[in-house]
Length: 513
Image 1 (cartoon, rainbow, N blue to C red):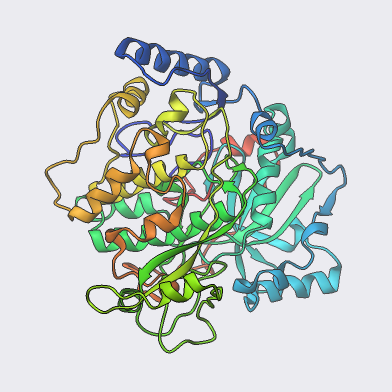
Image 2 (image 1 turned 180 degrees about the vertical axis):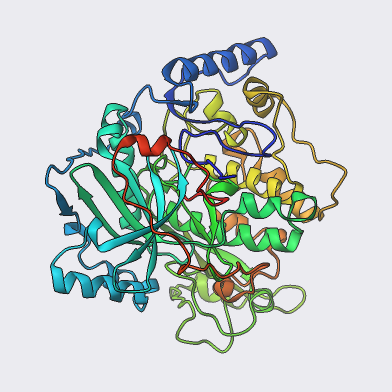
């Protein structure tokens, strides 16, 4: 059965029950202290607003399409194409040269060959092999570039249907975010183009499915702690990068984490993300050099886009972070300071790039993953991503989310009003429980990573022994089986918006958006 996790589509957490995903309904502000009766009223009001504003079939609501844009000071205008086959590549003509992580990808080369010969890329250059997923704003197809053996995931969106549902802005948001991404654990947008009816995004195909489906196949429907640590470490690096770009993800869950053919992950689905401003700052922290070397022995190859001072090695290589200290007397004095054990203490620069000033009043996310501040309508910022990160880790380890109730109202009530509890079984480490407990603090200002972002989480004892610089070189817990592309029957290109609602028996057991 296909995982139907896209925005505004019923999520399938713990497949026995429906978990609806809501999107961007404005909610009223509430006071900081909440009595049980007030909480019940708020939850009831939130649900009523969501249900009255959206489609009953999808559980999706949309009361204020542009609320987030107004809050972040961004102005975006969607200009749909009216021509029969238009390539929308003007803003990313140099994509391959601007994305070093994919610069030598044969898929880039194949696309560039087509462009060189025919000038632009369009739907007619692809053979759609199989429909592999569907969401609230489009369907995803496994596609082959004609004349090559290069395979892609093509997201096809009906512009007319989206315009009638006032969702074109979400399409634009996702495309703009995908265009600026270059990270090993985030999608690569190879191309985007439009026809008279459709808007298409050409991205990387992930044959390993999503983490929700993969978790269901594990003994006890949960990951062992070492496997969970591998997956959440890669997701953490992806979210750290997003926050550095001023992107608050807001939709983390296992269904949105795909597994590549090499077993590493890819975070997907950005149409609910919030774009905001961020001001990266370098501050100095003090750690023991010997401890840093012990945690990260070996040569240091920086992970894509972000240099972490804790990722040190000796001797220094060209890939190591470079530190520049001032020549003040105070610094010289600090440099000579010794600890009781004789280890030298060195002040190290620490990059802080957390969009802490961002604020949104939108009601967006999946019920079991919603942060308390979203439910209470107090306005939310980047801290909601760290709440969902805690829920995400909890689900991978225990096979369920911590606040799930008998229904949506009960779930929201539990998130705001019930304390975090851990089941007696399975047994997980104290460090894992402590990390989850630090992330699932109901007051965002007291939540781990509220100020310093992913840096705080990476320094938690749960991740002891993780070499952040070499995460991409670590052996994945599981490698997906090879997909037989040659045997996949070709399917015709989508013709009407009704194709979105057609029979889903041809879906794989996962989706992309």
